[in-house]
Length: 611
Ligand code: DON
Image (tube, rainbow, N blue to C red; front, top):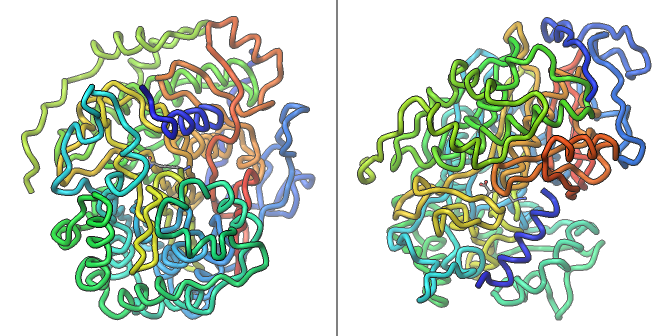
């Protein structure tokens, strides 16, 4: 039997989550994109004539031609304007984009506790103006006492313990990640970049209606745990317009500001986490916390139509899956007009194939030998492309069968370890340094468990493992043995912070999203909208999105995002096609003439903050 919470989350994510034209060459460079506009109707002279007006279906609620936010010096695009302001405050004081990103990360943990966090983990992609690039993996890990079947009941059925309650949490990585990033690429002391977050926690911030609504929606989960008294004082959610203070969290943040990562992973904070676990049957111990390390990895660097992408390698699947998808698409001279059935078919088919690999071949590289080079190889993509019928959908089982013969080598199983909600934010500074960060507790407010003596929520990231290989997780993802639970292992993620360089090597786009597996599809579609469909940033963000993750074998389209006749064409091609609500929430920044444009997803309440 599938537990109720798992069923309702599956339903929620199921619910969200043939005309041709010749391809025109994309703009040659950032200089090109930033040259004076030859299409005045596209707004200020920020873009070249290569940007084209977009047309969306009549019933699609987001209109083309909106204005993005412009900043001459710097930009933070995030889901919480107060967090963006923290980043801009730091850059105005002379900090670089990494200093600002760390400030934003800690501020989100205060003002956006449903997803911003110190009790979760994430990924950061950094591209410095001097050409250095780095990626940081601060994903949670399975506690030492975790085991393969820990979420199965006596009959072998999956319980909801990977989603809700203390067993659902991986060992948090956020503080290790933010402090490591600052130490390596930042310029300011930790206490200085944490000052805005500490201020928000100590002095409080004014809750807005979005925050209050989120609390209403999450009451059933949160009232089971210690956060109840903090977020529902006197029995009701914090009302909009109320000043909300978090003194316990402020003390934790001060410990981190003074002691660095040790202020979280050792001493009082670690003890508070271990105590919270012990109260209710959780398994994270002081030893788990003391052992946690963020990992600097080599970015997945790929080329798409002459543009360069820097993305996350495993333990996130984001970079490899986006690269594989774009490699498949690159071989088509034309992707056809935006909104056409052929475009939806090519995109859906490419995602379907890339997700087959994602779901079976990707996992924590410390535990599983991931064939990254082969999966991101353009020849391999050509062979996958050849399997796409021009006129028909291919059922996923047939795709899987074909791909099993195409895959270069079966990856060797490595022996033992040797050695809903997410939020993305993009940051750029005046020098052209850029940071793309995605961080999460997984579901809204994570596992619901609130560390009462330290003031924050713990994640429910354990559900990103294949808790029962071959069975769907919270996002309907059916994953294999490679991603089975093992102590100390990072669960496979879809987070896809991405930095795109223009054809001349200059910064073009800083982008990423939230939405489980839809992170991959939403992030890559914004990139495709800019590169292939020549949209201005706001249109690239407003454009309707689609999603295919191989299993379930359905092509999901954002409601009213395609004309009814196009939906009929896709059905005639053999697709199980249906509407869904929002696919991803993207925060992006694009380099334009004289500065940057920033845009938070018009599907949500985020807002970029510019300088
Ligand atoms: O790492 C992952 O792929 C997921 N834990 C992300 C969850 C997510 O995006 C939920 N937000 N909507």
